[in-house]
Image 1: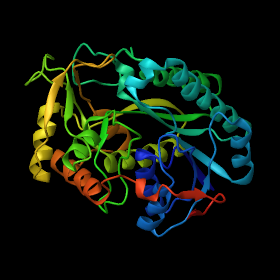
Image 2 (image 1 turned 120 degrees about the vertical axis):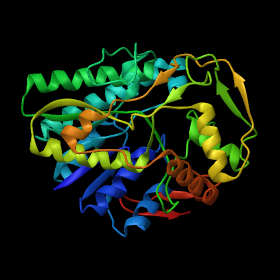
Image 3 (image 1 turned 135 degrees about the horizontal axis):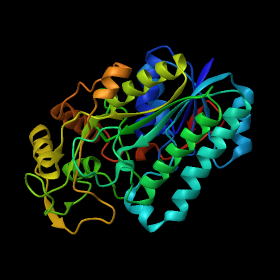
Length: 352
């Protein structure tokens, strides 16, 4: 029996695939490379010494999804695939609603047709919107403030309705906060397309000399230094959280949400200082206007995940920065040097 990983070539997906393979799971990856690079799949194989099946399929291609389920014995699904930029979603809302929601509907319909009813969904803390207080727990009222967050919130509601229509489903909604860091090997990490939308890859690209300076979006938030505060979590801790959630959905029925975060908030300026410390590089920055849809302070209450999943985030902020820097200094252009790689079949990637 296998696990289908949608978006498995992406940042969080690739790290989760490494942890799954190292834990002995058989995985099938599907990705369309809209937010990822083919080389990440080679790196997964290199880190683990293990192989897997891969399909270059878009979730909007329902027939393509059908073929994956016909050709493999899928037991459960981890669903990472989706567009993920807050700013871009504000500019291109229809694209986000079409891609994220329709892709998920196609996936769930195919899963149902094949009797696969175990799902771990990659949600987001953006579903909480601008919370009245922090830390945020799973009982807070949902109210996403941007189209990206609303796609996650809508999908959560769809999945809840799906369970209530058929109690054989088992679904974990993982609301994670701000993943950063990289695998200790330095072989896989965050490699955004174009200008980074997230803080840490932008900081690291400035540190490595790829970009001139960092824009700090707003300095008038009710935080220690006026800059936005987020709960940063190491991507490997996050990946392990997915395995903990998988074990739960394979053993129980129901639908439940879990925060995956550290419970500690760091401001933008604090993150810059931490990264300067571990890299030995100065990060030039300037204050600019806040971005549409951004909120001021956001960090998790992760107690429920600890109590029900047996999960806790162990890696601290210094380790997160060190691992990010190792990835960036070893891959200054991300996976770009391997841009001439192409898929020749479902399993092999080679240079052309």
